[in-house]
Image 1 (cartoon, rainbow, N blue to C red):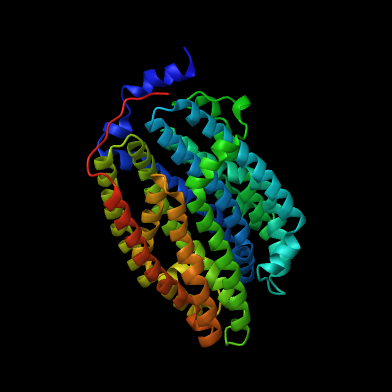
Image 2 (image 1 turned 180 degrees about the horizontal axis):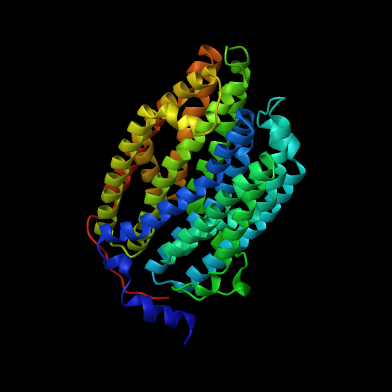
Amino acid sequence: MTQTNQSIKTLYKHNPLETEPVAKLLRQFAIPSIIANLANSLYNIVDQIFIGQGVGYLGNAATNIAFPITTVCLAIGLLTGIGAAANFNLTIGRKDYTTARNTLGTAFGFLLLSGFTLALIVFWQAGPLMAFFGATEKVYPLSVQYVQIIALGIPFFMLGIGGANLVRADGSAKYSMTSILIGAAINMVLDPLFIFVFNWGIRGAAWATIIGQIASGLFILAYLPRFKQVDLSFSEITIQLKELWQIFKLGINALVFQLSNTIVQIVLNNTLKFVGASSIYGADIPIAAAGITIKINTLFIGVVIGIVQGAQPILSVNYGAKNYLRVRETFKLEMKVLAVFSLIMFIIFQTLTRPLISIFGNGDELYFTYSVHYLRVFLFMTVITGLHIGMANFLSAIGYGFKSAFLALSKQIIFLLPLILFLGHTYGVEQVPLAAPLAHGMAFVLAIYFIYRQFKSMPSENIVTFTAK
């Protein structure tokens, strides 16, 4: 039996994404995605906690300076994973199984190629990169040590991040989750061993991280012969430009979001370094506070992304199959879930601020004063942040990647970046975090306009087709 015929036999008659209750499907896909994303966030957060306890706040500042490296890897990994997952599900919805298989092969090929290329660049240019990212004299040597080690794990990290999206798109949400959990568990076990027992300091945290990433990446590779909706072998991991372009179009939102995050973080670190030096806090305390806030926020973002990743296969398959009523139902449920969760996290961020910061290590009262202020202000618009991410990813899931990318770009580059520079250089280091809630508010209004236009142009009834390729 050929691959196409086998796929039609198993899927054409009944695809649960088109028939099962939406709430059930969202739980089925979102919960493993949330767990996986939280575990992935722990790669950085566990490092930050143990480094804070074992090295001090300068260690936290060093990992914050190095974090743009992780963000760039995430950008390319998610560009490939999310874009390929969306195209895979859209083509499955259209019964085009050949394109679906080619999409997977191209995605895995690009993840491996870009991963090894980035690893070489980061390893050989670690020093200049850390200086460019805003490392102070005290932080520079620690950040270089950390980055030169984590560079070795970049190919596996990107394979784990991007591949997890592809495995989830195939319907194996639990396997996708397990791939991330394996890496996180290894990281958490090795971190205290390497940092405190072996006394390796920040280098120990880096080694623990990459060993976990290697395990996750290999676990994803082991899934290749097990894809359920199409047959895929290692020999089919080749980059086809036509499919790569489709992946880029649908995943560009993730790329723009992560790369704009990198640009913003570099500007933010340098702004805090410059304006903080003339304040009572100095340069290192604001940089450390910003790093801790970012790490805490990754837990919130991890759950939000898990929810939208859970909705993505449902949205993509049904939009591809022209089941527009089901698309609307899925989006409404997704927004309700995001709103409730975001409200809960807003309350936690505003009421448990100091205990959250204390988890990441000790410091003097000046350190806690600024860190508490920074976190509360920076994360003040948590509720609408979750909704904005859901709206942007909805557009990507139904094939409008460039619109989705513009929403991400507007929040980070058009609104947030100028506000950081203006508030920092005009009003000082204490007003820098105010840039985030202002930018998020303006971006949310723009997102509502885009979503309104999209639903207004979408047919109000289903258009069912029965064509298979």
